Image (cartoon, rainbow, N blue to C red; front, side, top):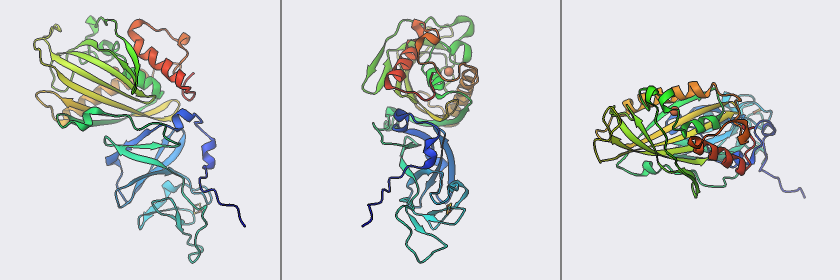
Length: 352
Ligand code: FES
Ligand SMILES: [Fe+2]
């Protein structure tokens, strides 16, 4: 009798690129839900692995290795026919479970059990498509504003950073760059905010700061001067979030109302490789008067392109998680704790 066939094969191409089990067993965003229409195959790259994303007629999204097990051709060069992925080389057809259903050179034969696509766990949440290349160790992190009907949610991006993804995250959870990188919007260059001491705790969802207070001449899409109180979270190595309370202020930064609006931002990073990433963002706003989505997106485009310009200059490109390689001030506590947290998780890919 033949031995049972192991159909949990690993693609040969997985021997290249990222071998970091923390990242391989985590969820990563590879696109917005709206990017993927049924009938088309979309290529993408995550952790140096080439993948395809496609949506079957039922609406289900699939993420597979961009590889045909037969002779290694790229499925992304193929097409969809009868809701199946067709390999462009010898025309093998794969159904939505990844099983090969037809080999045109032997149409009357049942394909071998090993003839499968390498499929990964994929989910849609918060308007993003997420994939895990290994075994997920935790659920996709939550974006609380998404579930609250008081909030409007607006996606922005993708922003292609020619930079390390952790550097992009660290920039997002850093308040002391506002007056310089976002002068006139999130801060005032000639009157930079003095940052009071804040704390960072490791909580169930990751890292969480206490509130950091800053003055913002145009702190959100309503266009008014605001005093903003940021609470930063590192939810996963490549997913961060802040919620900010804002109070209307005069031009000198004095609050002129007691009422606080809130504004949450969920920030995801797709590591293409160690020094290239794709940032995708979703904002949740409960602010008065409610701006339109285009205005929110236009402001996000300015802010995240300003961030991209500075993050792309940072050297070494891979973030040093050993603290002695850069200098950490008390005002950088969130970034410092983020680096230590990556290190304690045993992250080895994309860091030095
Ligand atoms: S390589 Fe895909 S069918 Fe031959
Ligand atoms: Fe920024």
